[in-house]
Image (tube, rainbow, N blue to C red; front, side):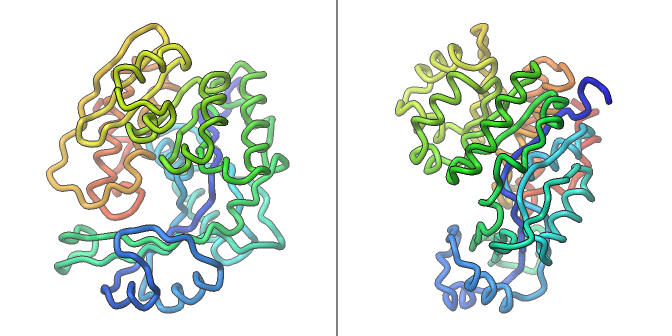
Length: 338
């Protein structure tokens, strides 16, 4: 076994994205606010799924999307996340491994079904890939994804990964939080790096004290958008936030949508990375996930932060050209162009 068998090990909620097309009447039938995300029960998921038309099903979840992006760029990646031994668990496993990510987390034999995100796309026009004024309405059942525990974290794999990447959503479950801390300690004990994404402003609101402790004591590479980082520090002035970040992380990436991003390092450097131009934006879902993919790929390959940021911006730009959380382009070609 080499010193670093993996470039990145990612921990997150293992969710099957199920994307289908419908009209507004379908949303009204199931009381789903158009353009929003609603948490649902397993029974609601069954009813909505049964009523959906032809669907595209693939592995999803924030960290899983990032893992898929890093693998697509050409890195060695392992994903840790929980599914049940059921139909959707098989779909998740097949899809995540098909895109080049290793996945060995034992499937649950009992308990809640595999998590599902039922995505209803309403749009104008005929194209289903690039639809005019398309809107995604999501109904999410978290299911077995919330049942990940410390027993699912293989310390041997963490010790041979350059970076362990963790999504903040896992902090919503105490057992999942313990799993994350086990991974963090294993990574640092082996002299490796820990990357963390704040995930969502509401997630930050729920766990601000824990996240501040993480960022100050355990995180080497931080990913956040400007709304999340303002929530974390309860500060609106980005200049003050940048100064604070320089004192807590080796490197922090703060994304600002069309305004680009800042790469902030502990040596006092601040790199202003422009957004990559996109002719038409169809769906911003997954932009932050793929930004992290690009930056992590550059980081594990020893690139300068500016170059890693440029690849991150390019990956984010690719995914927003299409519906869904995965770009349809060959990311490995893009990596060679940077």
